[in-house]
Length: 111
Length: 114
Image 1 (cartoon, helix red, strand yellow):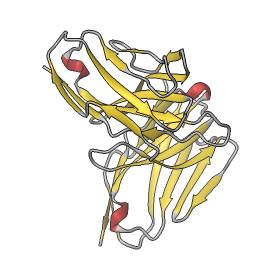
Image 2 (image 1 turned 120 degrees about the horizontal axis):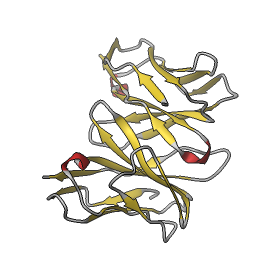
Image 3 (image 1 turned 45 degrees about the vertical axis):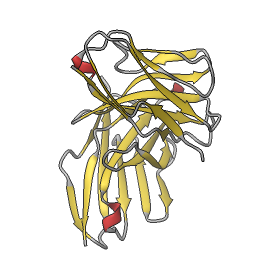
Image 4 (image 1 turned 90 degrees about the horizontal axis):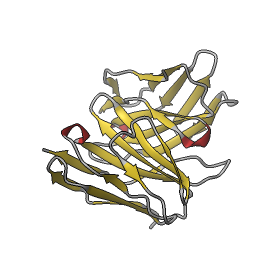
C-alpha cells in the first residue's frame, strides 16, 4: 500500500539555523508533491509545490527538493525564526486529485 | 475575502443520529475534498470532487456520503455516526489548473460522537 513517512519526532533548532524536514514515500509515483504548514487548531496552509520533473523549488526562505529515485523530498527553512514553529505536512498528489498526507513533523525554533 | 467555510465548527452528537457538515468556498474552485485528521495518522482523504456531480472515494470513505450539486458547496453526511468517527474534519478546495494545485483548507470541524 502507499505510504508516506515524515519524522515523527519533533525537530528543535536554534533561531537563525536551517531546519530540514524529510518526507519519504513508498509504492507511489506522484504527479507532484506539496508542503503545508499547520498551526494548532487551524487548517493547513499551502507553502510550496514541486512537480515530478522538477528537482528544486524555492520561495523566499523556503526550499524544497524532490528526488523521485530516492522517493524523498526535503523541506528547508533557512534563517529560521520562532514564528516558523509549527507542524509541517507533506502531501503526494496523483492524477485526479487523490491526495495522501504524511502525519507531519513538529518544528520548534528557539529564540 | 477568499475562503473556505465549514459549519458547525464544533459538534457533539450521539451514535446513530444523522448529521451533515457543510462546506462552502467562494473562489469558484472546481475541486473540493474532505479530510479527517487523527493524532498520529495525519490527514486522510475521505471523498473528493472534481466538479459538480463528480465525486470519488478517498482512502477512508466508509460511513460517509457526499454530494456536489453546486460548485461552491460540498457537504459531508454521516448517516449513522459511530464513536470511531470522532475526529477533526477539514474541507479543502483547489483550482483545476495545470499551474495551480494548492489546496485551501477550511477552519475545521471538531466532531465528537458518544
